[in-house]
Image 1 (cartoon, rainbow, N blue to C red):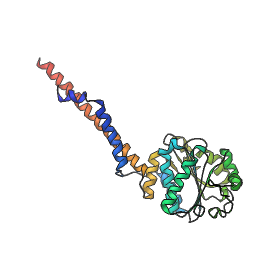
Image 2 (cartoon, rainbow, N blue to C red):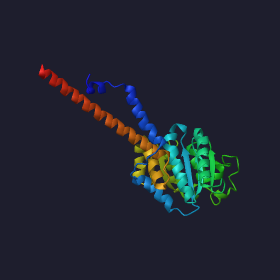
Image 3 (cartoon, rainbow, N blue to C red):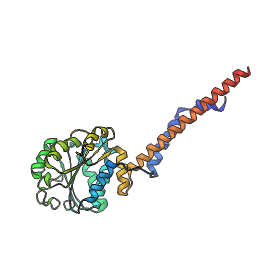
Length: 280
């Protein structure tokens, strides 16, 4: 059996092992391959950079653990940026299934940068009603959320000083994996109460939100894991998103190389067979 024949009959488990290693190794040891920053991601970064200290930044974490691989890195990168700019962070969620996860990631980033609950940030938690919660917040935040996630009365919390409703929010971002999410925040929030709004979403949702972006209804959009990696690069703290993009790049490269090698061996085998027929 020739080399070409042996290679074309290689055990598929070896191919699976190669792909597995190309996926696993960059996740464990990220390389940090260069990433081109898209205008829609840079718009969000530049807007947060332009905000004065102690501006009110509302982050609505509208996803659950099912969308964690794409949206969790976006939330961490945004929180790191907001805390670095000394903004007052008001976090919440419209998804009851994501409440515990949202509290965990907010606490994690706050402890990482030494921010204090109640003074620098607050997690309002979840309130029933979906889009109606946004309308209630536009009228009176304390009616929509009389207590924060820890059960403390929201009135009197230092970080909410001077904040009565959504009209007092300087900038809001919804990280949405479905409905209610980014569209709900535009329809029931920004369009009525006139605050600036940015968005983040899963990769498959991004094309559907581009009309809002192109019309100026959103000032920026972070799309999927790629968008999260771009934002991590802008913030200067590369994390899981950049590692994930490294893994994707390595896996795609491995597939391209394997396909090319298989084609080379295939055409080499055909040539050998042709020569064999001609010699006979």
